[in-house]
Image (cartoon, rainbow, N blue to C red; front, side, top):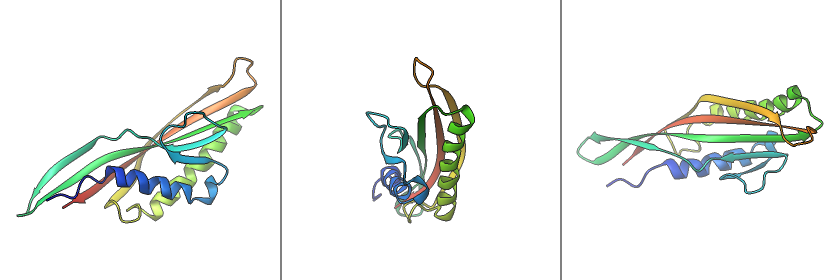
Length: 146
């Protein structure tokens, strides 16, 4: 009988991996969208859709595929567009390196790989004193549940 899907444990493992990154020491890192966004926020999104394929091997087991989403949000007063983008990009590079170094997320999944990113930035306040930027990182995961 299957032991349950691996998406929630993978979200927890990814959150722990991000919290342990020295490059994100200045960032608030957590699971779930923050209620109040600070200047540097990193979170593993709650949304996940899992696809299961039954494996016929005499046992009831499944191959699973799902995508986790990491969000980076930065807001800086007086920053230029290039400065705010660079802040987010430095965090992204550290996250990419960490996932590449531990593609099983501590043994929770068979493989986790970054499959895409999406970046957006703009003016963060009505007085045009602050800029903000958001970057999403998609992490495709595969797991075996048996």
